[in-house]
Length: 494
Image 1: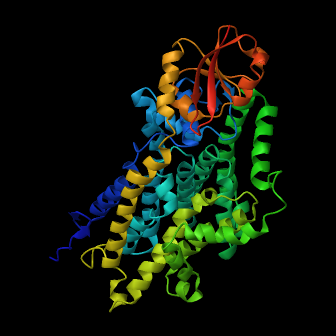
Image 2: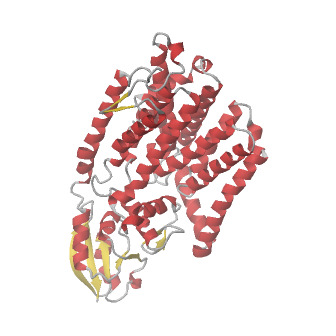
Image 3: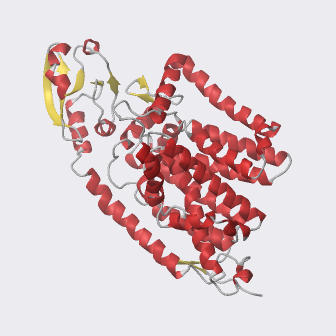
């Protein structure tokens, strides 16, 4: 009997079985995503996500709440995920707030590995799964308390299930399609843009394969109806609490912010329409270069039907979305993070397929196992080791440097010493959630000076302190500084 060789994975040797390959992928994900969970305090809007996640633990599960007020600019999905990850520990910490992104990133890698295994041989699928998370976008966003990677996880799950549904027949395909649209609904309740990423993939793919009638099929309509019920039920429950007008106006303002240039902008940013795709491709170097190889018609002609369907799906996942979000005036590279798994997968396919074609007797290797050549190619091993070094440098050097001098924890400790535990801390225009996250006690936002109760403690920014007579007879407790070095004033109303 022929014994399969071992996988030569960095620092380990694993048997050439799917279980061993999955262990190797899990170890790689842990190195990239779990390592760094505790690196540095929450940074920028991480603190906002963490504070709202903590409000979920206080009972606000239905919709996001910030300082006692509904905060509907984003749906509650990511905040609920933070709360669930923090529930066993009784409180939200900086690392538990980052845990959902690490889980979502790991799930995304395994979903893409599963997707690749259905179309290509085990070796290409395994090696591609190691390459998919090697983007600077993933380096910055995983682990992070930001929403972006959670959205990536839901979009990837929806598209993987959609791909499988296209290949199936009968009741099983209906079930897969329904679960796919439920993942779209879950993504929508995480960030409003999830349906755009899904249908900007699905419509071009169906058009390419001349299956546009699928969109009006009963299977698709039933799946959309079931997924829509989840969103409608949530919206109705929220509207019952805060009112339809507030929910509608918040969603509309979010759409206007995304699709209309800011008022201060000088017209439509035509230059960014051309530079934005280049920035996205640059954020995925070097694999994005190899993804262009898969655009050649001659490349598709080499593939069987299963592989061709997958490559078509990946192309429809990447390029229509990239075009659409390039035309949207409000540009930020992280906004298109949900296309990253597909772009990196195309790059991996282009690189691995190209190296495979240069091997002697490549045809005989089509059905090879992940380990049929005895281990990782030397170029790939060198790249993965280099990426691991970059991960260590980012975690141990970049993260501490970018949070140095912000002193959120030290300032929060001062507040805890000066404000009695039973007192609510009131805020007006202050937007330093980092300090308030580490403060960890009750805070409430007010909009008018006359709303401040007598004897209450409040934090004022410089402009509010200059107009302190509007608040009445105030006593200065301590002048401190926010994370940007601007003065903030802890006062008490006599």
